[in-house]
Length: 94
Image (cartoon, rainbow, N blue to C red; front, top):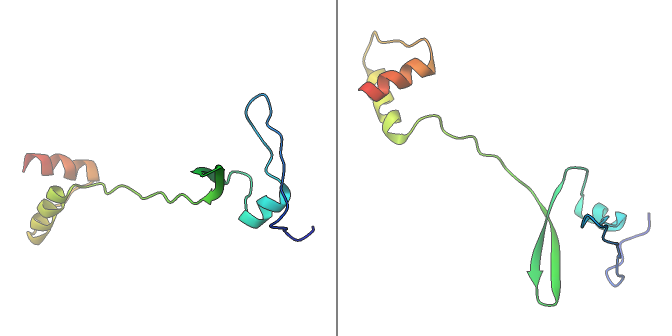
């Protein structure tokens, strides 16, 4: 493939469904693969195309209040739970 030329326009056509093919040189430069996400940012005179990286943060299963109760309960001895559901049920009673 030829080197990316900054002074060249890379043209694509829009389909009836509003879809356009991103030219190969642009896909290579942005490292876009099937399933990659892109964003269009409004700029003066047009839009800027950027690659988007999404990070999924796993939700904490317990609230801060529940964590405090867990710490208090774990300091004591003898209480065990067979599941997280049983623990949550106990926490909401405490």
